[in-house]
Each structure stands twice: as structure tokens, then as C-alpha cells.
Figure: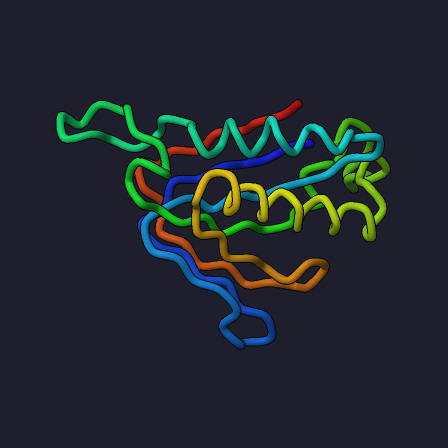
Length: 146
């Protein structure tokens, strides 16, 4: 599994020019499931992202989590994070999980963030061609892989 986590002031996601999801302050999490990823990795990713201290406190120290600031998460399935560009100029996505299982784990991940950590999670549309607009803060971007 892989995730790219970006701190945002706001973000919105549309499909075919129709607004699907939007958040205020929080995180945009681009999430990828790779072949052979164990379901248990969801626990690690949810705990890590929910508690990751990447927001500034009152002293402008990076010391607060998305939970601490009352932020939301826009969760976007992103199989292209599995892209291998080592050979040639066209990425290979052979390590990406098959769509049915990837979507199941994507949904479970969002549910765990909400149910266990109390974070409001908004979703993209799995497998769709999405347009995402976001206002990055910092910028602060973390790549998480396990």
C-alpha cells in the first residue's frame, strides 16, 4: 500500500463537471492498494494518518493531527501510485491490485478513519476520471508506504 498525503486549506473533486465531494481544512489522501497487500495494512495506514502531526499549533510548530484541528479527509483511489517507470517511458502498473479488491480495501480504509478515529471522510469515485482542485498548505506532502 502507498499513500500520498497533502495538507490542504480546501479541496473539491468532480466527475464530468459534477461536484462529488469537497472538504475544508484537512488532508487529501491519494491511496493505492498493490497486489498482495494484506487487509491488516489498513489498520496501520488509518492509525498513522489519523495521528500524523503535520498541522501547526498556536506556536506555529508542526505538532497537531488532522483530528486535533477538526479537519476532514478527501480520500482518492490512485492506482497510478503503483506505477513503475524504471524501464522505458510508459509506466507499468503491474503491481496494482485488481480493481474489485482494491475498491473493497479503499472503502474499508475510509470507514476505519471515520469509525475508529472520528474523522469526516469524503470520497472520490473509484475508477472514474476525476478532476481535483485543492489549495495546498505549506506545502506539506508526505509519502507513506508499507
